[in-house]
Length: 230
Image 1 (cartoon, rainbow, N blue to C red):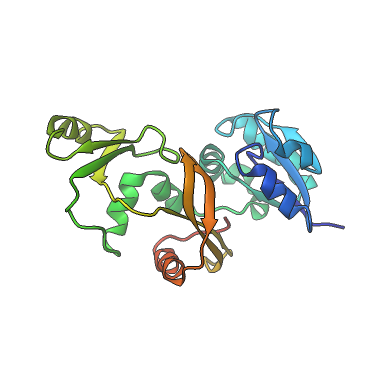
Image 2: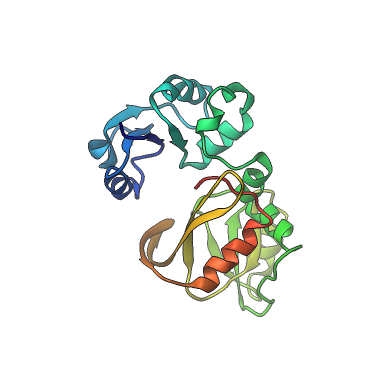
């Protein structure tokens, strides 16, 4: 009998290809709050689920947990909700691959993450003519803008006072997404760097690259952020 995996947010941009690949070895159960998409067509089973940040979502996971061996969560809302309600899900928590509360809290807030990591790694110098403004808590490059460091001082000062946004140096160059999988002891099992070719808030088209320097950098970061799962 095939190992059964539940994958959430399955109708997202990467869901269809992900299911097609994993179905070679696993029985895939997908769930999403949206009924339309391509992934639900190729899943072995598909379920509509409540919003990821709701109490009903926790009850949904409890009810479906008996059908699956492992649960992978793919949206910020679901991960935050599940992380905050670990005690309510204690009977099924061993099936959910998820990092600890501190790691999730840090990685969900870009401003806090930068302050934390400054204790351990070097950041680019202050030599850009541009600044990038982004939400402290956000997904991809949504609501992100670029401003001129010298011309837009007033905008910079106003944004710096904001509790929702933060400002940092704009870095011009190639952008990479690194997909990783960790075991329960924070050991890196797999890392796949992808150079972003086309993006629309999230990376839509990427080119897989073999780059040990990037993978080693990920390993370095892993010492300070206790990742579990994907």
